[in-house]
Image (tube, rainbow, N blue to C red):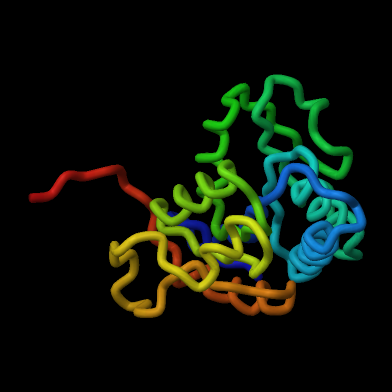
Length: 198
């Protein structure tokens, strides 16, 4: 999937999909397997992947992405919390050491779409920021914050009046996630800052 970049219709770019979730997982766990299959599917469908670059879901989805026959160098971006790009899992293609600690979550959450698999407070912060940014948000129906917020609205704001069922779209498989990602063009509005209204 590709679509025109804002400003210049002749420039086509592939959407960035952030995958977030548990930072520590056993390689044989259900969430690790879900993330790995999702990474493979994302790159096979020609999306680009953004993660926080560390372990758990971030490692699994990146590993799956690298296994796709469609993988090209530069498809897997790691937005790291620390100052050392060498802290990234070894499946990342591009490692950006932000030095921002948890504040780097705001960068990840401003991808074209955000998919959560499980997760704790860091994942919850990324989902909340993605919602505030007007991004498309998906949540796997598994234990953790993604399962808790799947099929829910984060708050009562009307982000897109023409999308009456706007919510964190709950998914159980990579096939469902890929299907919902077709909504990315509908979620193209960009956050223009917090404004106070009476």
